[in-house]
Amino acid sequence: MPELPEAETIKRVIEPQIQGLMIKNVIVNRPEVIAYPHAGEFCKQLVGQTISGMARRGKFLLILLDSGDRVIIHLRMTGCLLLTPADYPEEKHTHLVFRLSNEKELRFSDIRRFGRFWLLQNGEADACSGLDRLGLEPSDPAFSAEYLINHFGKRKKAIKACLLEQSVIAGIGNIYSDEILFAARIYPACPAHSLTGKEWERLAGTISERLSYFTEKNKITPEEYLEAKGQDYRNTPFLQVYGHEGEPCPSCGTVLCRMVIGGRSSIFCPRCQQADKSDGGQHFEYF
Image (tube, rainbow, N blue to C red; front, side):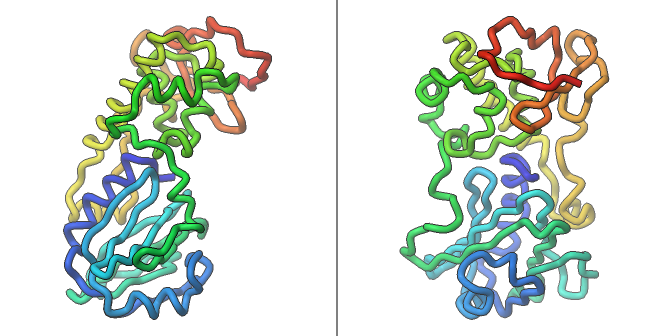
């Protein structure tokens, strides 16, 4: 699933290419990807509108229109946005196509068909996408150790699971929660209420730093993004622990381990992220 760095990369690649263009036509091959309104109304309202820009909020992307209307997009597990020439071979599982005034097409493909689009008119309250329920962006000036303590400081829940709560922190998923906790030297299953003040300070700073770092490492040109078909631009070479179970820790050489917390896999170093706190009575699976 694209997390904050990937969503920001997509925005930075696509926005300059579609800004100021008019939507000439909308083709819906899979109506179920249009969550609101129904597909016919979605197409009718968009045709003839001009794109003023894009925005990102957490893992969501937004296409902003001159009218004040906005298209909200969540790519979910396998969704992909690709801007192509009209004659570019269409990817399999292409469910939605925006034909633009420069004879290019903004295409949405999704193998698993979990991605969703919402179209909200100017001034219309968002009661459907969940965007309004997101917590702070890690880059928000109000994001701090104090903010984390206020939301998680009394929780018995594992800190790994806390970082995935979009209603508190927008944009962190399974990949970057592992990377953040490793960089902050915090055991993933550690109950949130057991963290010290210094650990909260370290965690807050690491969240902002790691997401900024991976966003910069994701930099890619529009040509490279198209050549990779919007897929192979991610941070794999720079990930220190995620996807490296059984390999040596890049810091100390100890074999990286995997555990399951709340149904989600977590890779960690048992030496750098020592389990020296009470687990609060919670149970985890280790592999």
